[in-house]
Length: 245
Image 1 (spheres, helix red, strand yellow):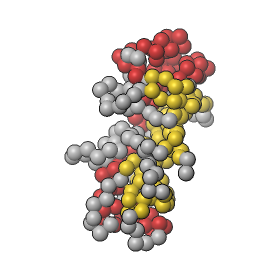
Image 2 (spheres, rainbow, N blue to C red):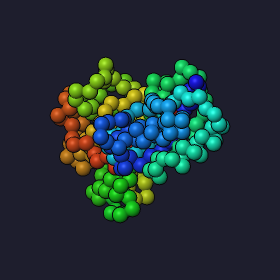
Image 3 (spheres, rainbow, N blue to C red):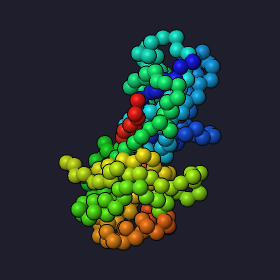
Image 4 (cartoon, rainbow, N blue to C red):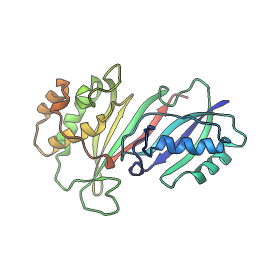
């Protein structure tokens, strides 16, 4: 058996998140079912680089599997893509050292949250429609306080099974685009709902509903109830995963 990394992308709107869940169609279960068929019906379990919630997309996602491969990686990817739905695409697979882990070996993760300002029927599943003027300068002033090693309890779902809420954030910034904005968020790890809760609260800054100082106070309060409603899932993408190979 050898360990292989797979690089994929998927449309999260078609799934009930990444992780296997009873009586729900998930990305992980769909891929494991296809791999098991390719593996002569011997059960294959995969380990992903992280979890994405219902409706959240992945532009670049990595998982690993231990396989006794009987064909080239190129042939295997071709056959796997033929078996998977159009909502999941496998871009490549490659052998890695046995001790490399899709989740624990990742050094950085980048999410992007996309917002469009003009109503567009071709974007409603892949970006969030938000037609209001936003003060990007104030939003980025507030977001700059997220950079560094901090406790992100305020922007995390409660009662999650994590040992620490500390995260190292390397970038947190809004960018202007032709018809809207996107928020880029890079860290060593992310807590559940952290990106959407952060974006939802920063939007309040952009609308001048709360000040930069109030945002910082909310962040430092470590009180989940004080942050704004989470931004909708369809605008969120797991964008890149980085490893030190």
